[in-house]
Length: 105
Image (cartoon, rainbow, N blue to C red; front, side, top):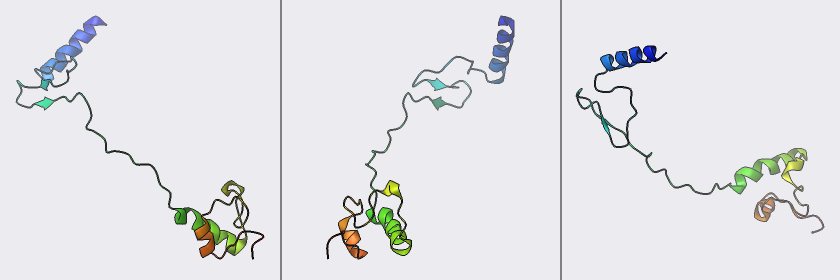
């Protein structure tokens, strides 16, 4: 097995002289004796700052309210139905849809 590795290493060196099979160190210039150079960076470029994920209430609730008004369908995962106590849809959006809380005239 050691003899095979020596043979493979010799082939690599013959195909790309000066590069060898050793690992590169950060900032090391590779292939300088071949005419092509590459600098190895020791860290990735800084990422863009992240912002909290925001959900537009209209995009979330309008299709649900449309479904409710047209077909009286409401998924239990969405919480209480429009007009019921604890409904998660914003009050101003319920008002735009003409939905009033139960018990109010």
